[in-house]
Image (cartoon, rainbow, N blue to C red; front, side):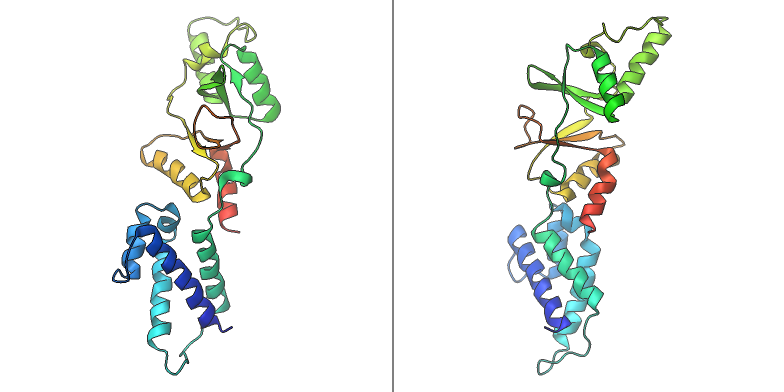
Length: 238
């Protein structure tokens, strides 16, 4: 198959997908499709400029065809790029199984020493805290540091983390809105969008907690922290 045929096949797959997602008829141009889809689909928003460049190349190929011949064939890397993008848009990678893992959670009634030991042993920066299987909040290393700072400021130097409950330390959380729940069907593009949304607000998203349908009452299936973002980008660029 010629490169031009492979290119057009991938382009048509993308166009058909965007029309379906946006409910647009044939009267809507591809540029308009991209703009419309980018408002609600993170993957399209991420690759908006690439899609428009591919549209320009498509127009050149189609408009200059005469007797099934083309003036120029796309380079191999161009064809491979649009085919990869078509696969990303039509079947974007999801958080499960990529980030599925056992998630340690602790009860609010447990001593904060348990959390500190777990963070040290497993190199964790965040631990979900529950009360009778219901999510209460995300305990972070920063919260523990704030709690310690407050104790020192108050002259309470004799700390015994084995006697102090996690519930007390959680009161020193700087911003309770530091995590979100997402479903197992969330795409990696959606993951990036969650973190970018917090950045635009001048806030910090510590973690995304994965459950079956994104409800905090469900069992944890995985967790994505801010430190996992390089891995997210790597998987999207494979």
